[in-house]
Length: 153
Image 1 (cartoon, rainbow, N blue to C red):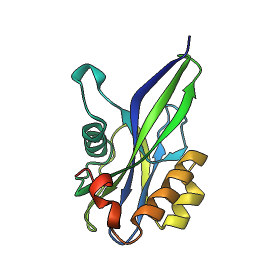
Image 2: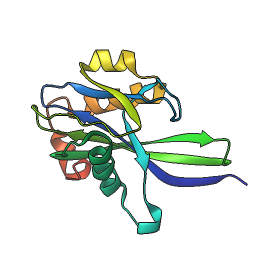
Image 3: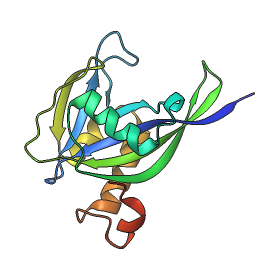
Image 4: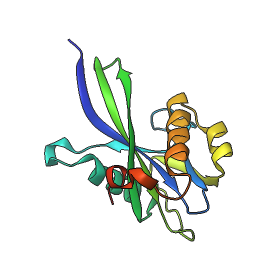
């Protein structure tokens, strides 16, 4: 039997100048050397909401404080070891322009890149698709007429 679970969040961190934070996985972790966004588990045993997990994961993996948070989409992926389809709730998190990144142990490097540079750097095609959705929805700096349904924080 294959389970379907909403178990993780992907959070794309963006400065107001539209620089996107990309993170390189450290050795000794899954996919060492790959470039990604903030990715982490929802703490189901604590009944954590996806948006709370997004804010927590940003703080744990980068030391940054989320100023605005938008829900963007949901992306499925299959974990063959567990015979489970995971659903990743995707968020866009805006942070202050002058913030300083403090990496957690999962990552060895962080870079602020333009959208085009981030698209070229990401390892996973689904990361590129999600960032394109974010730009499409939030290019003006907010969600416009959809602000009331997309803005979480």
